[in-house]
Image 1 (cartoon, rainbow, N blue to C red):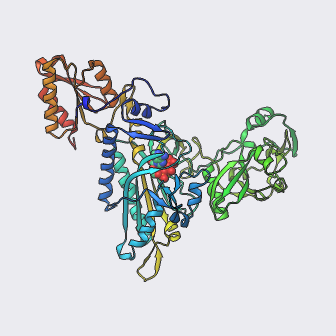
Image 2: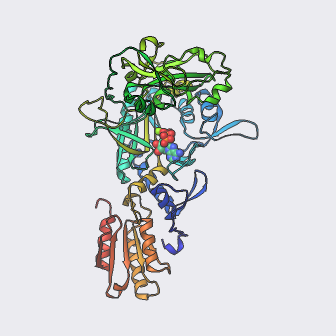
Length: 594
Ligand code: ATP
Ligand code: MG
């Protein structure tokens, strides 16, 4: 392809809305253009990258015997209602774009395809003899993300590979799950990515296995905690650890502390010579439940710990046997709207009485009380006294209503690993590029997708689901492979393998040699760009660095002598070679297996 025919528009300046390098470089390099918030056009160079990634994904899934298919993006509400997800996905902070058609029927744009594929499987897979089956597709997904950002990393329309497997028993499901994990590792490796598999949250229902694949990068939105030897790695959403032990409070009678204006744990500690681990932090939150109830929560943590909202959501869901759709801190305004007396925020204690909720307009009138084990393990502590500017010093759990004891804190770097207390957890940031999940019969049971098992019984299909964010992966590759001058694509997913830059197209010798190299490379099946634009050489070199083609052949002043320069983008190493040697050097570098 000739660069002059590519409609290539590169930008020298960093686009104002692009915060991270990969987003900046893809826009500057003419790969993507923003069409609306979280909506991007993939320009021709980008589309070639996305097709290459898709080809690698297809290749690895086809090897497992998975069947490619294409499911509708426009999905009727009914199966989503049967699975119980319509409400959660469309109301409040739900991420499904949804609409009514001209007959007034409700439809949604697919954010994911469990419902559609499970209904189909129920119709197609009738006997154990047909199992196992894995279906997959590579397709545009729609999610009305609350905070779309970072370009293709979190967009509202993006390309996903999603796969769904169907099994007659657990062992078979696990077999496919393990094979899929290995296929994922090969996919990321073939795409030139340094990715790690980590334990991931699998929600409260099912409790089955789930793993995420993270590309390690500072711009990542997820936090990975792992042991130095890599034997344990988990998303912070799910990670566990042994907390540092807290300093015991000195002996002494329980007493009141006057704590004027000491709202934060930090203020409280510095004013009273305490360490945060000697205090209890009490949070009031509201859980919106799937049956419409609004359940206030009173949550106690050790003062030096942070709440983990995913663990909390799972704990509430487990406790009640129905989903908590979202959980958010209760505000002073909400308290007033419920017609309740103000709470002493900043001085709350775990013994806050249910009377505080009496007469609430729409909330349940009692707290669900949860405490992290590390908080419950404190014998004596300092906590709020439930009246402004007062705390209790030396309080104990004896005077506090019963708590649900459950892990709801964030594990963090520097704590000992639960799996090997000799090792300290370390943290890194990661970009989630893939997620595999054992779903069990969650969807098949709800959607009545059953098969006849060996004993002739009607049994719900067991399912796994497996996603890869194809467009996110492409950008993650840039996040891992770039320098100050631009992108350094891994060869396997680069839009082109080689770019031939003719320094001065007015020079007929240069142009002829450039054309001849271009022709030879194409004849060998090498994906080649020819920069035949009448731009200055410096502009063309800058562009070549920016768009990140792995190999560059510069045809310049030495063309007269039949010599050219071969530059490797990633190392910037350059060699002056005869044009024949240049050709064989590049052919060798781009040929598979070299
Ligand atoms: P996240 O936690 O980042 O929101 P998710 O857990 O909701 O992602 P899944 O439902 O597991 O995502 O989707 C499978 C894959 O699709 C993810 O691993 C990710 O790579 C990709 N993906 C999810 N949401 C987006 C998005 N808004 N933009 C681009 N890719 C996405
Ligand atoms: Mg996920």
